[in-house]
Each structure stands twice: as C-alpha cells, then as structure tokens.
Length: 217
Image (cartoon, rainbow, N blue to C red; front, side, top):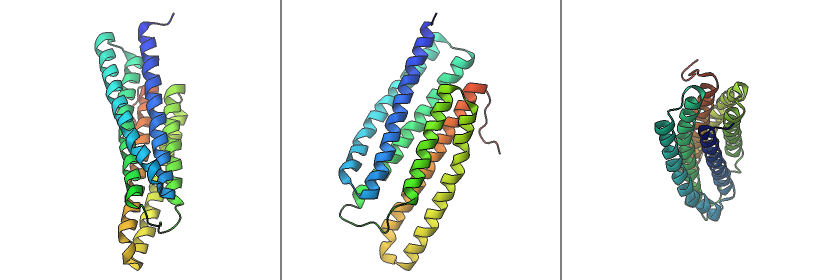
C-alpha cells in the first residue's frame, strides 16, 4: 500500500521534472533565438523565467513542509535533499538562459560575426547532461549520473575553443569587440549550465548510494 509520504514524494518528483522541462525549453529557445537573432523568441524566454522562479519557491516550500511534518529518513530524506539542491540549480539555469536571450535582444538589427556552430553544440551537450541527471534520479541509475558528469569536460573544452576563436577575431577586427565579448559571455553561461547539470548528477549519486562525490578527482 502506498503511504501518504510516498504520494507526496511522487508529486514532488513530478514538480521538479516539470521544472527541468521548462529550464530545458528555455535554454533551447534562448540559443535558437541567438542563432537566428529572433527577438520575439528571446522575449518569450525572459517572460518564462518568472514561471521557474515561482516553481522554485513552491518546491522549496513543499520540501520544507515534508521535512518538518514527515521527518523522512534514509533514501526518502536523500531524495528531498537532492530535489532541494536540483531546484536551485534549475532556477539558475533559467537565469542563464535569460542572460543568453538578453544577448539576442542586444543584437537586434545586426548580423552575427559568423554562423553559430559551437555555441549550439554546447547547448545540446548541456541539455543532454540535464536529461541524464534527471533520468539518473528517476531510474536510480548511477551510470546515467556518471555519463552526465563525464560530458562536462566536452562543454569546458568547447568553451575554451570559443573563447580563443572570438578573442582572435577581436584582435584582428576591433570593431567586432562588443559582439565577440557578448558571445564569449554566452559560452561562459553555457559552461555554467554544464556545472549546474553536474551538481544535479552528483546529487543523484548521493540520493541513490548515499555517497557524496563532490570535489573528488
């Protein structure tokens, strides 16, 4: 028989998955808006951020209420802690998507320095990381969490590649400095998204095994 606590945890899990879906959609739309300098799509991303903010508050409140009233133990307690931490990471991913969308708005009426290839690739990798991290939680699968963490190096490498390329362009064509710097900041935002996805994957491991793998080499 399903207990009341189990039902509440199922509902909490559904809510964090809903938040993950919104964060992923925002990230996809933000990068797509930049790729095509689509200001309307960028504005949609910015408006959506308030939905993530409200969900974050609601999930925090639900986690706190369950902790106080149900006093869960063992795996149930670890799940709530994982959701609490993932909640914060997803809200920050939403903020980073908003920052990318704001860069699109700054570029309105201009042409991109060059067609975007590596930035969309970074976004694809980040989105795959987020999906893997949450699948790890849902399926209680350590290997999925490890896959997520392993992808982060590819994201970091692309970030450095983009930085070097754009820095070279700035040096050769000083008139491009403003846009090149903006795109460097976009790549940095995506690198941070990868870090947040890694955080979620590390919390998935903690939930499944009770092992804290943060800061391990």
